[in-house]
Length: 150
Image (cartoon, rainbow, N blue to C red; front, side, top):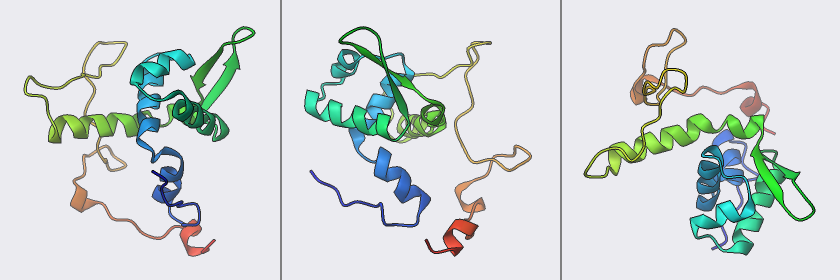
């Protein structure tokens, strides 16, 4: 299915969706965070080769993954700094899924801090001093990029 482009919209969420809005993309990123590197690793998702090729190319073109040749015919796909910055997004979506579409036996994954083995806090909006904020306690105001209109 071909989706409408959001490239013309002056909206940060729309611009992010332009790159990340196709659902296979988030699963590819999930697997990259879990250690998948090679094209064949990502095929375990059940994705068609041509779709995977297109998604990986987009992620490389947008600087989210780096394609690094390993030998004459294989490459690794590695998360860049820009890609690593997506971790909170994936964690938030996973936490939301566990809360609103739970498995009857509990969370499917528990994310822990590597150094301590302790579970991390669920992702949420926080104030500058670290207080958790509810959805109705946050609002958006125009920033300089919106005010410029371009």
